[in-house]
Image 1: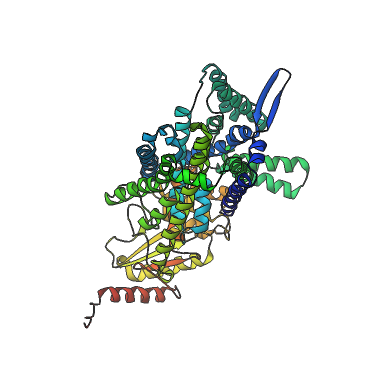
Image 2: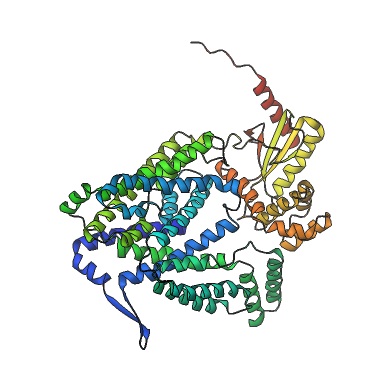
Length: 599
C-alpha cells in the first residue's frame, strides 16, 4: 500500500504543478509540451511532440501494466471463478453503462455525444491510493472487490478506446502486429535471453499499431495479455532452494548465477514484469502524464464557461453520480436478491464509499479527452469537469467512510464471529447441531496454535459430540515464512478429503514445511501426489486461504491462535478447563431469559 499511496500523492502533486504552470505561464506550458522530437535512422523518421511522446509511448507502458493485471486476475486472481467474479463484474458493467447514459442525457443534445467515453473509466492508481488514504479500518475485502472491479472497468475502457476512438484505420500494419504478437507468445518457450526478444517484438508491435491508426497504447495491452502467468511451481521453488543452499556451501559466481536464475524463473514472467514496472509507472509515467495533460486554465471567464457547459456538467454528473449509482445500485440489488458472494467486511456502507471513489476518473478520462474532443476550449471545459468530479468523488467517499467508521465502534471490532460456520465451506469436526462451537483462526507454524490444538483435543474428549470444532487460516507470514504455503497445502489436501490428517502432519513437524517437505507429507499420507501438486498451483486453493485471511483482517486478528467460543471472541487462557468454562458460560448466557426493563 505504501507505493500506491506515494504514487497517488505524486499524481496529485503533478496535477497541481500542471495547473499552476498552465495558469502562471500558459505560453511556456503549451510551448514545452508541443516541442518537436524526431527519432529514426536515415530516411525512416518518426516525428513526435513531447505531449504525444508521453501519451502515445510512455502511456503504452501504463496500459501494458493494466494488461498484466487483467491477465493475472482472470488467470489466477479474483476473477477466475464466476461465482466470485459476479459481483465486481456486474458492478463494473453498471459502472460503465450508467455514467455514459447520464452523460449522453446531459451533454448529448449540445453536440458533445462523442465524448461519452470520458466518464466510463475509474482511475485505478488514484482509487487504490485514495482507499489507502481515507478508506475504512480493515479495508482488505473492499480493496479486493474494488481492484477486481477496476480490472473489468479497464477492459471496458480499453475496448471502447479501440472500437470508438480509432480513426484512419489501416488494416495492413496489423498483419505485422499479429506476427509480432505470435512471436511474443512463443518467446515463453525460449530457454534464455527472453528479455531482449520481448523488448524487440514489443517495439515492432507498437510501431505496427501506430501505423495502423489504432491507438498505439493498446499495443501494450495486447502484448501483456500474451505474457504467461502462473502460480509458483513447488518443484521449481525447491530446486531454487537447493541451488541457494549449494551457493551458501560453495560461494562462487557460477552457483550465484544459477541460484539467481532459478529463483527468478520460479516466478511467472507476468508477476516479475509487474514488480519491475510498477514503481516506474507509479513514480514516473503517471505523474508525467498528469503534468502533460492536467494543465487546465482556470480564469473567471473559463470557470463561468465551464459552469454553463453541458459538457462539463455531463462529465461531473456522469463520474460522480453515474459511477455511484451504477456500482452501488447494482451491488445493492445483488445483495437484496442474495446473488453472488459477499464476504465479511464487504458491507453496503463500505461499498457506498468505494462506489464514490470510483468517480475518480482521472487518467483515462484525460486520455480520452485528447481523443474525443477537438476544440481546445471544449477540451479545457472537459478537463475542468474531470478534475472537479475527482475532487467531489474523493470528498464524498471520505465523508461516507468517516460516517461508516463512526457507526462501527472500534471496541466491538472482531468481538463476534464475522462469518457464520458453514459445513459446506469450513473444516469441521463434530455434529452440526452440537451445542458448543469453537472456531480457531490459526497458523501451522505457530507453537501456541499447536498448544491450543492439544487443549481443544482434550475438550473434545470430555464433551464428545456436544462440541463442534472449526479451523480457519490466519497465517502470520511475517513471523512464519512457510505458514502460507502450509495453509495452501492443507487446502489442496482437503480437496482429497484429508484436511485434518494433513493438519496433524504439519503440526507434528513445524520446523520443516518447505515445498519438498509438504510434498513428502502428502506422499506419506497416501494422497494422489500429482493431483496434490496441481491443486497447490490452482487459484481455487489460494482464494480459499485468502478468504480466511480477509475474514481475519476484518475482525482485527493480529495474533494466533484466536478462538471464538459460541460465536464470541475468547480472551484469557486457552487450556482445556478454561475453554470448557468459557463454553458453559456462553451457553448459560445464551439460555438465560431476558430481564424485563422498567419504563
